[in-house]
Amino acid sequence: MNQYNSLDITEYIKGKRVDYIDETHTYYVDGVKVPSVTQIVAAILPSPYSDVEPTVLQQAASRGVALHKEIELYEKHQLLGSSIEFNNYLFLKKYHRIKSLDNEKLVIIEHEGKIVCAGRLDMIIQSELVKGIGIGDVKRTYDIHFNHLKLQLNLYRLGYMQSYGHTIDYLKCFHLRKFIYELIDIPIDEEYATHSLIKFIEKAS
Image (tube, rainbow, N blue to C red):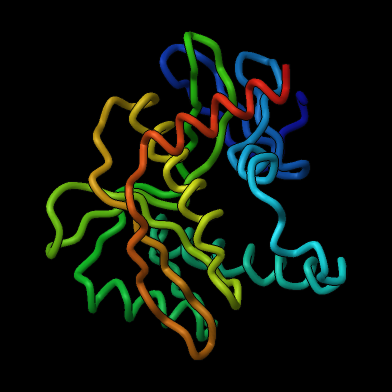
């Protein structure tokens, strides 16, 4: 854990050191490994990919990672990406008058004073068409698995508000493929996120 590479992230949240190790996609809070938001979603809801070949999943995941990196480099360093999906992202941002306020933000989620998990949300966004600030999530999957996405983004919302004390007013998904570019509204459901968190804790204990 001492040999971090350039893709690893360390931030201090509410006085706690939070490390994200990119190679293994793992999180540590004050040196203790904790589950990710993705792992909690997977523990609560059945996988929509159980019948998909591992090699196909790996190829899709690699393309998704590449798109996320294109968007991150653009938002942080104004480096233009070259993929069709990236250009679709720019179109959606312009059409919906969205700007990115922060990218790849670490969050931690607590319950009754104990750290339950950590995660890294895609972006904090602001739109001229909607009041407040929101979470934007990028998905390159062919199908949008709505229940999984709803739980994931509501957990991120809970984590961001706990971690930074700012209210998240809306949740949106950038669905990006070569011939698909849509911005999907995801309902806020704090009770669902909290209930799922408690369910995960009970299963793990």
